[in-house]
Length: 353
Image (cartoon, rainbow, N blue to C red; front, side, top):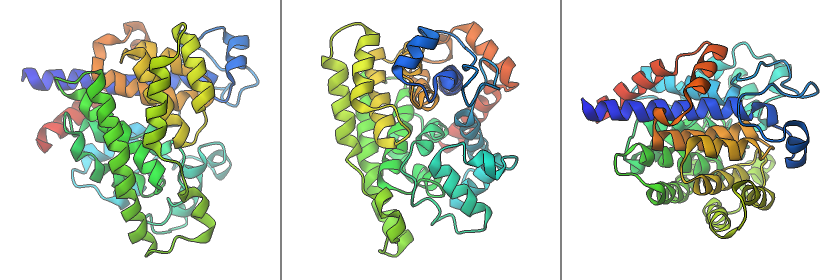
């Protein structure tokens, strides 16, 4: 019982990190480092977006599609222990049920492309071949949660979760890195180095498994119109570069983060998001609030980067590491109980044991 309580505390912390990171990064999404400084100075609590921002209609602390999709995947894995690719597609379609075609154009390009084809009845094994952005990683935390302390077991479920929207080597690698990091972080003996090693292993293994899945899905012939999405740099090497920058750059945390952000990038491509996230994780030494602040104030795709690194840190440090007022505000603004999802994932993980 003690072990299960600890696991619940860590899974709850993971979901807190996803949600709070997402909501904290919401108002700085799309902004440059300079614009973040000019408008906010530094974001350290929930803030509304600027009046000219695409998300200006949302209140401070509001979650976005990052958390919404994460909870959709959590619900699916809780309800369907032996889920498949079609279950993932159905979960994403159900989440998008109230999203109009115009609204689709405002979200991530990979999910946008895939959802339009899924709605038209296309086979989900072929709808994700353009997906080299970070959507697969931003919603993957629940897969790590159901394999606590066993990062070697996440790849099969990560691949199924990626296929409908993000079937590229770099996207599966990025999602595998995050799921493996969350899984390792949930272990009782995890430390900073073991989590980073799990993430690097996950990226390498995910890339290899993705290439075989792509070969099977396309019968060895990738359509010419999606080839550009399938040609990507090595995510593992970019992650190693980010870790090296995080270790060697001098200055305050904010100054070091700025060097990292300018070097690696803060955009929606997986090849930028995951290296930046692992570099921030290293700089923050796994502390959730510090990591979320660093990511939030980097701008770019701030909500996704903050959500991803927040989830890994939350799994590592647990729910008690978050400021209580932020947790209460997040759940009130969004009318959601992360505890319920955490209980469901904890029970699911226990059954898998």
